Image 1 (cartoon, helix red, strand yellow):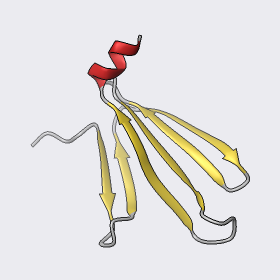
Image 2 (spheres, rainbow, N blue to C red):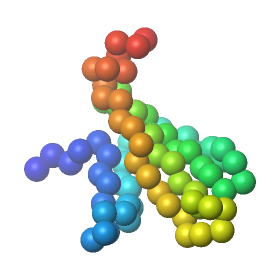
Image 3 (cartoon, rainbow, N blue to C red):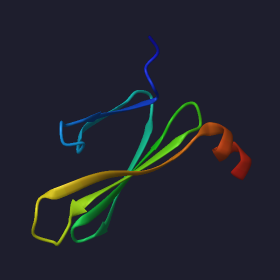
Image 4 (spheres, rainbow, N blue to C red):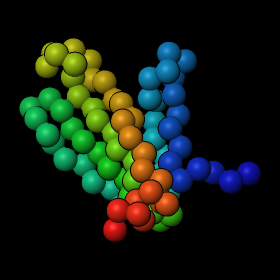
Length: 78
């Protein structure tokens, strides 16, 4: 069985529990006092974007997968 380039493992409620990526270039950047961006550039050329931070500056941290650009689409942009 072939593993996907990025595996998003979820909790029973659908929230993200963990992200597993092998051979990725990782970019994490603080975008605000309570918000962060994470990008994964995969060897196949795909790019995965995630955002995480507090919803109202005081609550629990929410982690969201917002976008995936697959290799054939990313290649068209070069």
